[in-house]
Image 1 (cartoon, rainbow, N blue to C red):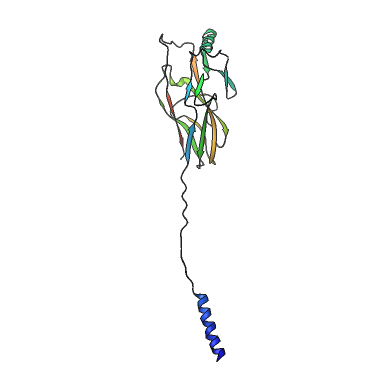
Image 2: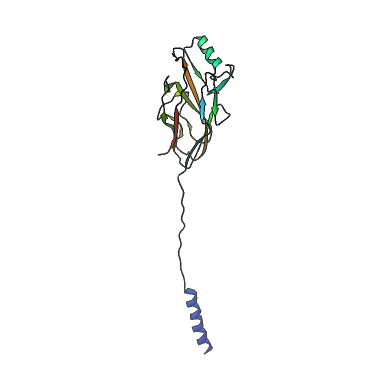
Length: 201
């Protein structure tokens, strides 16, 4: 009799062991595309009326020294007979450096920074302004191997692949003076606005 009861008890326990309960839940992952661009410089000033500089101050751009724009430097240029000379900015707004610092932060492998648009027109021509980008750290490479006249759509630097992370570039501008420039008696005091665009396909 005890064996018989033990048998049924064993069957009952086995049935309990086979009983199961299930539930389900989800794991959700949301990752935004990151395309961040910042430039610390707010104004590249080419002031050929500046009298605080001696005319001997230079900025090294791509391994070449360029004289900073000033009245003394301009008079030296006129005295030399030209015919042309590229000048570095007298000063920059937003930074104490002789260049602007562009920072790109992205999780995209392929990206490009370019001049998207130019607002305004200089009397001497917007092409007198030249741009040069120099890589400091991070991904990609410069697409301006030498100072290049600005234009809408001009690519400055970018990454063709594996461009994720933080990348830093120096952004230089130069201005070309020509001995044949006929400057009005009132002088010139003009500015243009360049809009940079970081894009990824």
